[in-house]
Length: 187
Image 1 (cartoon, rainbow, N blue to C red):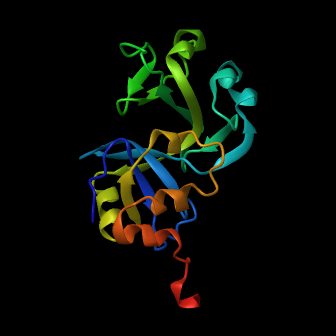
Image 2 (cartoon, rainbow, N blue to C red):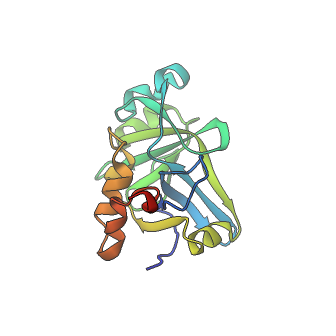
């Protein structure tokens, strides 16, 4: 049951994916087209408080108020994903929609211009990126499950069980993978 990898979907690492950058990860795709794909890892919080690196944004960041390791590309940079508040009206300055309710925030925008328009914000150091056709190849070889995202997946306070819970809510046989051991031969 292959789904199209597109912005707003989740990539869930399969047990076949052994790359330590991505083993057991859940990635929110922020952009995906014929030129490549970009996303952020949702379940790798760091011990670094947002207040230490982007103090102005600290009051609007969802718990836990730490940076998340978004992926191995451009780890010195930061991406911010936000949930747009209900009734926010037209897209605020410094915000670019990814889905109807999730978008990217330009961290150079003064926080005062955006804070009232956002319900939640999470900041990621780095991101995951794929060149043209690369992600499609990885999906075809069984490295990733492509599944629908829930907005709450992005802003969970506790991320340890995110992968298992995302898989558990999938239909049919895909849900069975939520309890599969890393090496079924050891079962």
